[in-house]
Image (cartoon, rainbow, N blue to C red; front, side, top):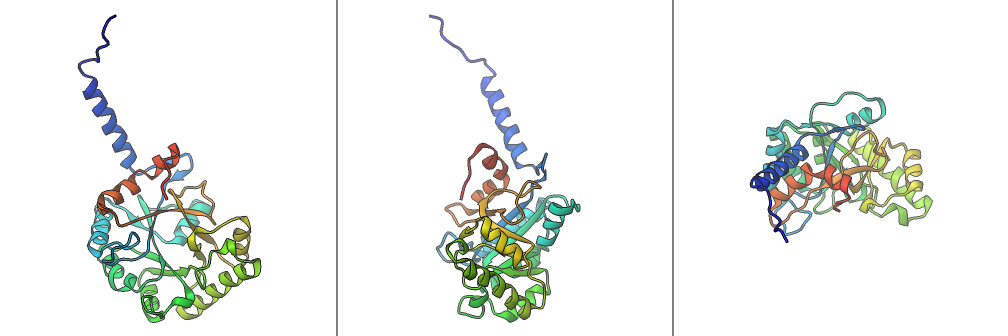
Length: 263
């Protein structure tokens, strides 16, 4: 029986193919559904040993990478204008979001965002504002005047799909009203607590006056996305935070296409 031999250049060809795949995955993507838009999802920017806590120096390195690679921060309004009307976006559009409204968003994240010229959206728990560890209304108002949009994460961070219709509607309406009253700017977007969402929640969210909603579903946003169930890419602290940050932002479309979905 004749032994099977690989061509001499097999390994070289394999390496080149892999390099091509990596380069293609890392490049900004446009598909039949338009641009693929990164929506990053953070929580805390502090030095706590918690997967949801990104160290300030790691957050700085991430923002520096985005700036040096020509990403442009956009607002939720710009994102929805693109999805609804095709309004043009800048190259490499990026929406940076934070959930819960922790005080470190003001003390640690805000200065770094300003350093690199990025805006962001913070989804606050309306009834936790001013409590220990959370933003004050004054801090939120200051940021809202300087490129940081303050939006809703409901009144009490209760998973909406586990509430009665009237309870869910109350969480949606009252948080929106309170934030608008305190900040003095429109509240049109919500991040669903724990990503809890279904068709009924979509109807209640629209009825409460919101224009869009953000989930914790992993992926990039394009014109095929549901405006009330928009994908995001959660960023975690890991044993190698920066490496995993790069992996998550550059390979999101591959995870979606081939079913390699991460939480």
